[in-house]
Amino acid sequence: MTFFFREMRTIETALTFGIITGADVLYGMIASAWTVLAAVNCYFFIYLILI
Image 1 (cartoon, rainbow, N blue to C red):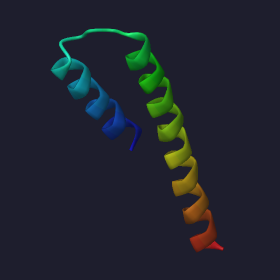
Image 2 (image 1 turned 90 degrees about the vertical axis):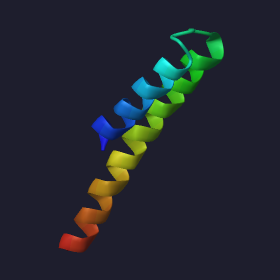
Image 3 (image 1 turned 180 degrees about the horizontal axis):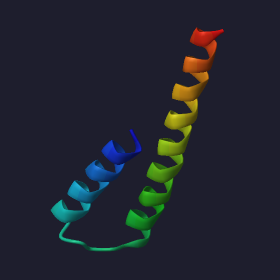
C-alpha cells in the first residue's frame, strides 16, 4: 500500500514537471500522514478479523 501511494506521488510530481512549491510540500506531508493512517487502519481491521 505504501508503495502504491509513493508511486502515485511520483507520477503526480512528474506531471507537475517537478515544480516544488510550499503547497506541494504541504500536500506531500499530508499524503505521507494519510499513508500511515491507511496502513494503521489495515492492520487494525486485520487485528479485529483475527480476534
